[in-house]
Image (cartoon, rainbow, N blue to C red; front, side, top):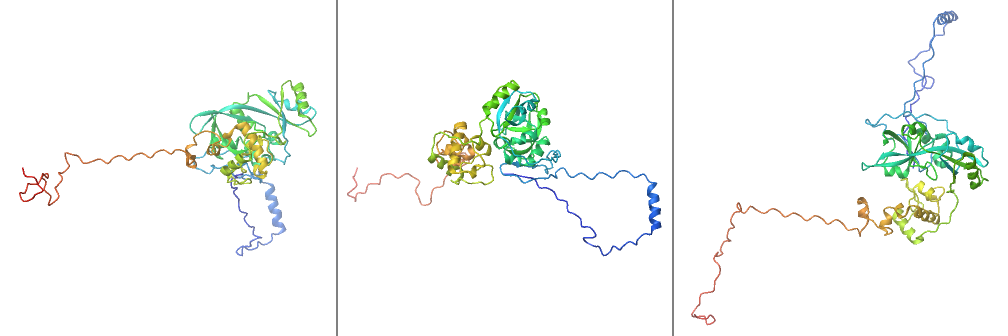
Length: 421
């Protein structure tokens, strides 16, 4: 799902030709002598340069249509207490046909791209630097976040096509804003346009998307922001895309020989894979009923797709192509079984507990979904305080009653049933 800010529009004022004003009268045509005198006067004046046009407001951004699974925006910029957002540069970004990286070479020099492009079979290469920075969790604790420092123009070529087509995303990345994955944006409760503390710096959330397949980090930033976060000295990796006929294993060996660093072949997530895993159709159908009411092609715009509610990066990590809700039921189950082998049942944190696929209690806010979840017993009502015995009035006897205790009846000499003493 894409969230874009509204673009202010300045209305065009009609000219007098478009809307003639009857109160304006035509000016008499000047004579040639008057024109000559006016030209002589102007020639004696030192005319300065024309003033620069007034710059557009910072929030005026040219946007392009993008596909789902990407959120970009400047939400929060109109709040009085929000920090002033930096201006977003308008980049001249031409459409690109993205390429899938197939080889990774770690611990390379910054100028490794030129050497890599000379290797047969290499079609594109770019360098990234990945390091860990401290981030504040919603509960107040601090954890490590993997951040990649990238060149926006180069990294765009190896991103998913729908991410590469979101030109606004790359403009914000170039404007020192950060792009977070869906998973970590949800974990950190991030909102577009807000600022997140990374290390001792405050970085603006410019977009939430799937930057790369497979993921290279939890967030990406440009070189300027990366330097502020201390990533200038981080280990650099070379991501290499290949021509259609190139063999990844052979190119990896050639890159090792040229660069003197070990190279690793990256599995192609677009290739179909045979997945062996537990479960089967029955358990996945039950899980789909829990996750999406059994609708295998659902797309509500909440960032999750398909019957098993995949995040886009989880879908690609499991070998899927395209969008999850566009795939068949069998394909979604195959990707789910692969994701299960990678992440376990916690990839579906609530429904896996509801279906008994893993133990757990449910998080507090989801306990109402489980009828077997033992509810907290309601607190017993406290007894009402009784009257103070010193101040309590004495109880009055009901009228007509004898307060003396009842004793045995007096014997009657005429009653044969009563013994005589």
